[in-house]
Image (cartoon, rainbow, N blue to C red):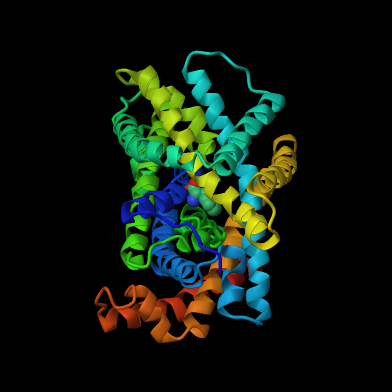
Amino acid sequence: MQEREGFGSRFGTLVVIAGSAVGLGNIWRFPYMVGTNGGAAFILIYLFFVLLICLPMLVSKLVIGRRSRKAAFGSLSALAPGNPVMKYAGYLYLTIPTIVLSYYCVIGGMTVEYFVRSLGVSTTSTTLTTFLWMLVFLALTGLIVIGGVKNGIERFSKVMMPVLFLIVILIAIRSMTLPDRVGAASSASDGLAFLFKPDFSKVTAHTVLAALGQAFFSLSIGAGVLITYGSYIRQQDNIVKTSAQIAFFDLLFAIIAGCAVIPAVFALKDNPALVLSDNTDSALVFTILPEVFPQMPLGVVIGAFFFFALILAALTSSMSQYEVPVSYLVEEHGISRKKSGLIVFCIALVIGTACVFRGQVLGFLDGLCANWLMPLGGVIAVYFVGWMMKKADLVDELSSQGLYKLDPRFVTVLRFLIRYVAPVGVLTVFLTQLFS
Ligand code: PHE
């Protein structure tokens, strides 16, 4: 086996995996998903999925990666040689991140565009400019993945992620305290009620599916990324603890982003319910936050920093998507990293272009990947860890070969979640959606 590069430290591991998880999913996707799916009830269901389904899957994915020491494509077939399902799972883990990358770059491009705007350059958005900004973002991601300036961006992210976190908190505080407008029908506090007072009468089968999809998308689960990154984790690092920390930060980021966007919609818009339920308005964060910045001291600077930090957060996620097909071409076909990067660039460009010029394509691909393919990818992983992997091997990985003491009750509960709760949970949501 060839000598593989890996993560250098526990903190590095945490930052890179958290970098993949925290991104546009938290700041762009979460607020508008909450908005279009009725608010607090959606958040509660989402929370439930993160804890009971996604967290056990996150652990399973990292276990598979580290155990096989292989990138997503070959990992399961290396651990279960000859098993046809595990072989085809490799193709699934290759397809998903490539598709996600293609439309993620469209939104990433919008982030760059709004950053440029926040610097005072006036631009008008047309389909062509959206295309060009997508191209810029995709090229940036490609250059980082090929050129290995990864080190640089990681070092940068270590600083910028906390900055982004602080800025989002500041914006959330400002949004939640926006003054009532004279004669307005709603205020910021209605936005908070929308976020935190659940109304279960609005929950439909689709709400549940959307919450499931959001949980998978936001944690990057089921896309092959976590297996690939898991294969770089050092033997002595604690997978359980790392997983719990990542899920916690990801959740916190999303909730705070929700607090930054939703109360502002209620305080600043005449018909917030309509703005939120309008499914086509996936640009919510881009349209509403620039209205909040002027209401903050140093708003112009904060706005520019926000979009800049968001670009970095998006890049650490798009890099992780790009890495999966590239590592496949390099590891399985012996193609050079540069050529592999170019091939992936061309494929993503074609799909991304379709997303730009045909509005519905982006929404369709996003729904397909987040709601269906990623949960499916997760189920295959827990099926392997729960039913095919020996319990002793699982314990060996979880305890880092006996380095950490594990409470046997913890192992029993975790294994129960992996074997039964996670797969049955996902399949139930699928079936309910299909038959509703
Ligand atoms: N989790 C990332 C985000 O929240 C998106 C992502 C999806 C990253 C799939 C990798 C794989 O933005």
